[in-house]
Amino acid sequence: MQQVKDLGEIQNFCKKIRRHIVEMITEAKSGHPGGSLSAVETLAVLYLEVMRHDPKNPQWPDRDRFVLGKGHACPVLYSVMAECGYCPVDQLITLRKLGSMYQGHPDRRFLPALEASTGSLGQGLSIGLGMALAARLNGGPSRTYVMLGDGEIQEGQIWEAAMFAAFHKVDNLAAIVDYNKIQLDGFVKDIMDLEPLAAKWQSFGWHVITLDGHDIAALREAFAEAEGAKGKPTVLIANTIKGKGVSFMENNPKFHGTAPSREEMALALKELA
Amino acid sequence: MPANTKFELKMGAATREAFGKALVELGRKNKDVVVCDADLSKSTMVHWFAKEFPERFFSCGIAEADMVAIGAGLASGGKIPFVASFSVFVMNKGFEQLRVTAAYPPDVNLKVVGTHSGISIGEDGPSQMSIEDLALATALPGFTVISPCDEVSMAAFVHLAAEHYGPVFLRAGRPKVPVVYNGDQKFTIGKAIGLVEGKDVTLLAHGLMVAESIRAAEILEGEGVSARVVDMPTIKPLDTEAIRKAAVETGAIVVSEEHLVDGGLGVKVAQAVGQTHPCVMEFVGIENTYAESATPHELLEKYGLTAASIAEAARRALKRKG
Image 1 (spheres, each protein chain N blue to C red):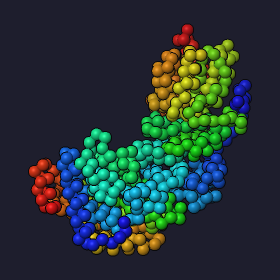
Image 2 (image 1 turned 180 degrees about the vertical axis):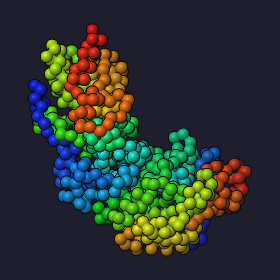
Image 3 (image 1 turned 180 degrees about the horizontal axis):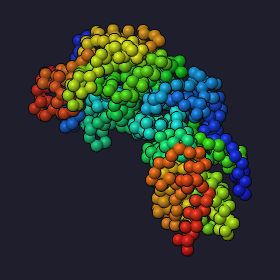
Image 4 (image 1 turned 45 degrees about the horizontal axis):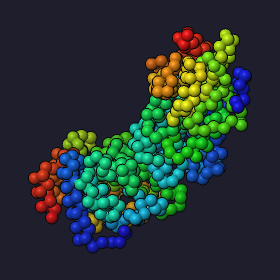
């Protein structure tokens, strides 16, 4: 990993991940396509270029760690991990089925290469902070990345963790808010508006980078900037489109937590060809 | 053997104090031990650890949910985190975090310490009193749950908790409690310890009710009743063999605890008795209510957590045993 890829190569990788997401959720007949599709570029850049990790040695102590706070978006994580070689690609379609390593929310009992079991929103940032503190005590180079949903950060524990991270100067951690503007019941601004979001994180003592979460170059730059920011944690506010890449899913609250039909899958795969 | 088998119980330190001291020793022995606190370090007594190992001590502010999940993350990074607070806060406010970050991912080496358990904290009242923590902790699959009765056993269990790989809940109290053990006693997670021999009835207990059970045995001895006293510091996994033996050999069991009867040690012992050797049972604990403000002594009297209540329960059991 860590090698900078050709832009076209990453874009093709992202398309492949999106196809996996649509296929596996269709096959499962339930799941969360919208928030998986919005997070594809971030995870692709992290796993292909940014993170120091070794799929052949998943327990390498000095590896970088990724925690998916918004655990319901696990189809994107499973797909990326599978394509990196952590787990079988041909099993992705067993998502949510009895005995599958690809559980409905990330579960380390079934897929030990996951860094954390998540699914109850609001806990991922705290878990990541513990990992980052352990790395700091060990004097190792390990960095921790935590992806948060925008709806997820309505949870109070996020802001407990946000205070902790700045107070303890946890600069070997970066959080990414997948700001796709939609949660289960509708648009975030109608459920519990987060704005002014950047100012909130700034006032909590974080280094804030706002960017287009589908722009590969911007993501590369942001993660490099995060690594260089010393003395405070960094948050990437990644403006994204829920359901990105599938026209009828984009910005459509219905596809937060609804599986596509067979017909919809065929249409989606055509668009993602 | 126990120090005071013939009912001479000298007052010792609070189990929270014994925990705080043992934690410092443990920290000296093992550099991977780290501690998280939620603004109660002077009460949970982890301030001694903080003073000696500031780099391994993390102040989380008054944020128990965050503290618990940070602890799980530290464990995942290879540390042995002790997260400590009042039991009522760490178990109730951190419960869902314990469930998702420590219980169902396998092998999370997190140690949770709840001090100020029960009603013997006294004047602060029921919002600070943890009377359901054992019901919660034992409901977490994979957790080991320990409630030591005195300073000697608490010190030992702090070290045993660190040596045991996996999540542990350790329960401590606020007031000074009598010393039950001398320094030679060996402790094992999952093993009950017989303190007083007896053949008519068994008095099982954990925490500060162990000393009360010893006193109850003395009262009963005066009435010609031979009561066995057994300390059950490990609530989970339960020592079902010790329970079976008590049922077989004495035919009557009284379980006493500073906890709600619902969900406490008593119902778990009843389950084990039912599965091994059914016998007469009685339960001494807090009955379906919250307590109030008063001195610890007044509260233990009012809510029936005394040697007299245990002796009375034993008499009821013996009457039914026939």
